[in-house]
Image (cartoon, rainbow, N blue to C red; front, top):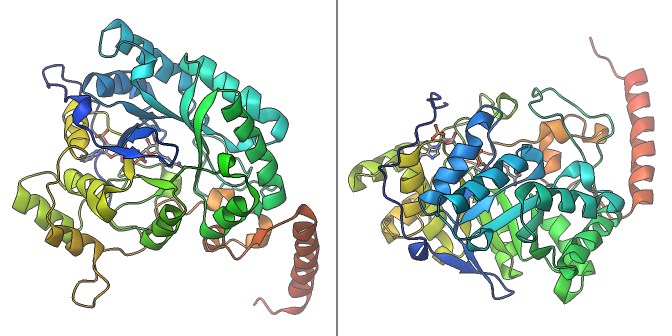
Length: 388
Ligand SMILES: NC(=O)c1ccc[n+]([C@@H]2O[C@H](COP(=O)([O-])OP(=O)(O)OC[C@H]3O[C@@H](n4cnc5c(N)ncnc54)[C@H](OP(=O)(O)O)[C@@H]3O)[C@@H](O)[C@H]2O)c1
């Protein structure tokens, strides 16, 4: 179920929230990161609103802005930041915590520094607070692509290649272009390999990943936390307006879930607010969320989620469960980004392979061996099996 798209609605009469009231999570480096991040991915429909939306979010008190080169709007977000300074919402970009992401198409070691430089220039800042590697492999899709888009050059995770990209990201930190570094969409196996091979100073301190009430990823989140990696959840209200390529008939709506609806009704708040308060309060407030909206009222409401604990322990158990049959929670493994547009040939069309760590390679040569044997197997399969 998707929510009907309504035009953006900015309302200067809505009072800003005091940013100091927004909870901050402590990174292992000791720095503080606002738990609520304003998303700037326009889901291929709201691009025209993103400058106004971001400036309005800053006016209303959001201080953590989540950006990415892949969103093709870093200049627009940069303009929103400059406008916010002109309007006096913030005194300088230093008042913000900016997250940026290295896009898959720039993971070749020689492309990393220029990509980061281009991001800094477009955003109009000297430094980014948190720089994430957007996805663990270099597979690209065209912006706005359809769900059946496939890139014949796509490859699985190959650690030997990733670690070279990561080394360049670490250099950006040493050069002072980025302050903290992290990953996005890493799995347990890919993170284990990374942590195995990096020095203490080069460890990721955050991982951004899909998390919402119907897709909680609690075990993976706990694993990252056990390694002192803070987790932030994207699509935190269930991304009702996500691109068509990420819509599948199996999907369910977080905000329409009966448990979420019942809690919202009991507390007299919106369903979106319940999702975000859960994202904020779960697991002892150890992580954060990323949410986007083009409406002032929702911006204010969404930010409030990271300022007050409106959910009781019983509400949290109703959503998360407590491991007992009586309280199983509402997680239905409802992953919204299947990532099929990133699939490599040997995944054989099965998007689950992207996430289940069954095709993770340590070295390029290992993957090449696998690829050759897979091609031979595929050929024999085509020659010998009956296909009606
Ligand atoms: N690292 C990654 O790979 C990755 C992947 C996806 C997303 N992200 C980041 O995460 C951010 C959030 O993801 P998302 O935008 O897809 O999902 P989302 O924040 O869950 O959903 C955003 C949509 O929900 C609506 N909405 C927001 N708050 C609402 C509320 N309180 N009640 C009802 N509707 C509400 C908004 O519509 P209206 O504008 O009409 O309010 C907006 O279109 C992105 O912008 C991006 O920064 C990162």
